[in-house]
Length: 179
Image (cartoon, rainbow, N blue to C red):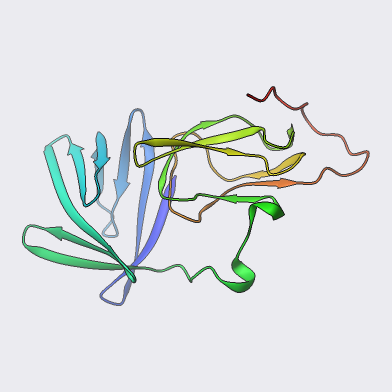
């Protein structure tokens, strides 16, 4: 499941999306649920295919969040998450891999507890009509896996953590073959 918290007119709103077959069930802050059969984004337009028809939303990223233009109105949303600076910042050198941009997790190649080699494929993120393969920054063990195939993620979302293996500690699986 994917959840996002945003601020709209100083009110904190939670949006949730969960896979349902080949589509997504979206839960809005008012509790209403909507089925999205397909979503496609271009530079400034998000097109949603719903059972009732197609909806095109114009949007614009701003330094404070995003503006959505729909039916002559502008809705301004700000991220509710604190800015990632200082102690909240992680790097792949620490074994914490984050989404480089918003996207869809299309393939997960590993499981928690699995031994991995440096450079081994861990998962694939589809974003802006491209696929990005995230690879292990060093040989280690998959300590935490936060996503699964089909998850939508935002930029800087923590996806996976790789830790140095404990000396003499067993892992649940041997490394998979890398490309």
